[in-house]
Image 1: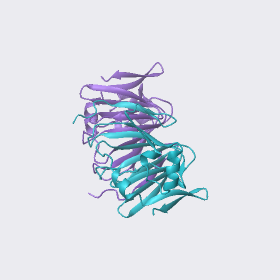
Image 2 (image 1 turned 45 degrees about the vertical axis):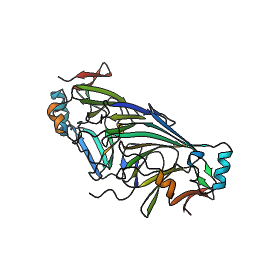
Image 3 (image 1 turned 90 degrees about the vertical axis):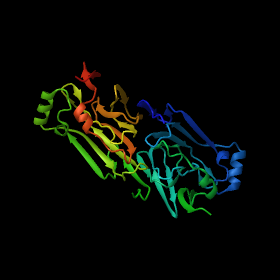
Image 4 (image 1 turned 60 degrees about the horizontal axis):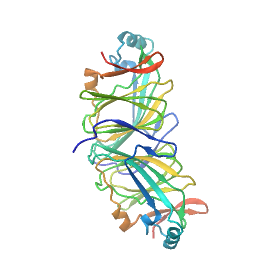
Length: 186
Length: 186
């Protein structure tokens, strides 16, 4: 496989847009239907306009273990019922692949899970969050502004979204009395 | 080999210090003697107090291809003769390993080289610089404040400093009429 032939610069602007990006993911609520606990609230929000939940701007790289993929995520503020907007969450297709996040704007939580273990890591600008190899990971916007972060992961890591679509995440981050709280999934 | 067992948070403060770090590199000019073109100026600066050129704060990880190492570098402003303060520069011991830099404060240049190719990439806060696999890389502080950046690279990448100690870098970044200029090494 050909490796990236040249070194080069990208830039993240104040809004967290990565330039140049080569692929973009836009996830509306309908794209992650069934992931929020409150199915009625989810259905109503989709019917009322299907909000944009998050965008990912990525610079794709060859699927080689020696490459690194860079992307930025803009996760918008909002809730479905009492549950904060979140990403779908994934394992890496090659499980033994870590990921590094760097908080750029806003605030949120990184929720991680592996086997019967879970953890919730607060993130704000300047936080470097290390997703250890093998851990599933999902981010949640617990603030009132877009939660923006940079991510770096291996070129060959890949994504396994299906396991979480099927099995769900063991923890949810919800608003309780105006503040974030972590509850176990039903 | 045991993988990192848990996900966790670090943080970069306004000065670019990574907490928690597990290993720290401090390079004074004497630690990189012979790397600057002006040997007389280098000798005089070492004799006059041997300035601190840069510090690296790193969180070490298992030397496994699926891990990622995070570090921050504080490269101080200064010159040796007309040549700006710079890092030693290295290849990765495993050549097919990329590296991602993210500019946090100050300004500088990323100088890269492979085979008979070279490039000089300006960096400032918000710049994401991609060091392609196989390329040697060195950073240079062209400003008047500390040049601070975050780096992410593979757990098994390793460092080969020796090749550059022996062969040098094909380009140098120097001050000409008060502004940075790139010249070929003699």
